[in-house]
Length: 425
Image 1 (spheres, rainbow, N blue to C red):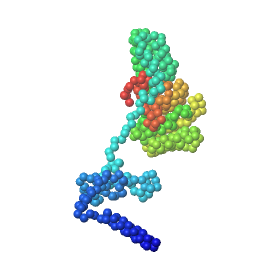
Image 2 (tube, one colour):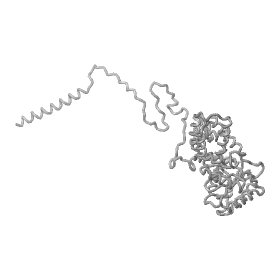
Image 3 (cartoon, rainbow, N blue to C red):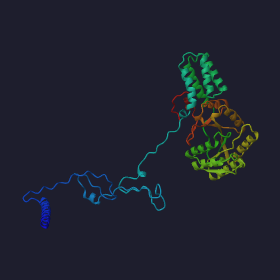
Image 4 (cartoon, helix red, strand yellow):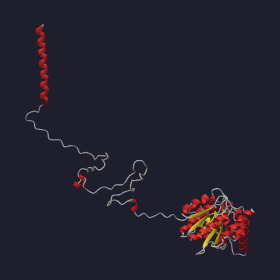
């Protein structure tokens, strides 16, 4: 039994030794066999991984390489300053000037010659869509007619009254056209429309001087009058900007001392136009504010004082008398009142005529500023004001922007009514 165990153990050892020797023999090279040629590495695709800052990027295979570029001795790359930690722009004490560019490379943004974009001035035709739409439908229908009959006159009357030209002005216009038809001067509806257009343009041009007047070497005062809510303060602010851009030295007078925050509103416009403002205590004497403004303007050499006044109900005698006092004070030397501008809201239509008559009698209005003309279909009120009162409309508001107060242009206005293109500025 013992002998059998010894034999089995010896056999196991022999088998184990044989297996180890066989494995060693498989790994050993065969004598006389040629060695395999070295395998060339496969071409690699350009890496898409980001390169560390400052490290040169490997060129693609097959390209000529500048040793200086690989070693980092070539030209420096363009460096732009980015936002510093702690803020959206990184600008602050000790951060240095922003947007730094290495000299000799791409120019900085502020060095590029960029032409400023100049916006075209607003046109009456583009901003009078509501009035134009109301009239143009009538006019196009009439232009297609041949004969002139009672329906023609009814359509014209409806068009003019709908645009708030007014009964008196409409009647006068149509009576004149009827006379020309009866005399044979006008033979069809198209000629009637052309005659109406010429009549409107002529009456608007003949209503008075549309220019704003400045007396050279004097302390000019422009007074702004009107009821509350028509846009006097906003008009003054926009006009101050226009006059400054024209090279005029302007001072504002906050003469509306009764309306809450009126002086603050005018002060905001003064800041935008970069002009000075004279203001008094709330509820104080508006005449005193205007007087102080004129004296200061004369001392500082300002060309023009734009004086706001409180909204006056034209039916209140005591308030109108106070307005007369403001004008008398403004005309004391060295002041010279060269314009009294009545500000009217175009959306009020014929009510504006009543206001205009009262203010014309009280303070000698020299012209009208018609605001909100872009937001009404009652633009025909311009014709009624100029034809019935003989007052020129000098400025019109056609938007909310600071540049949307423009001189009134009779030709562009009539072209807008008849839906025509005119390039007159």
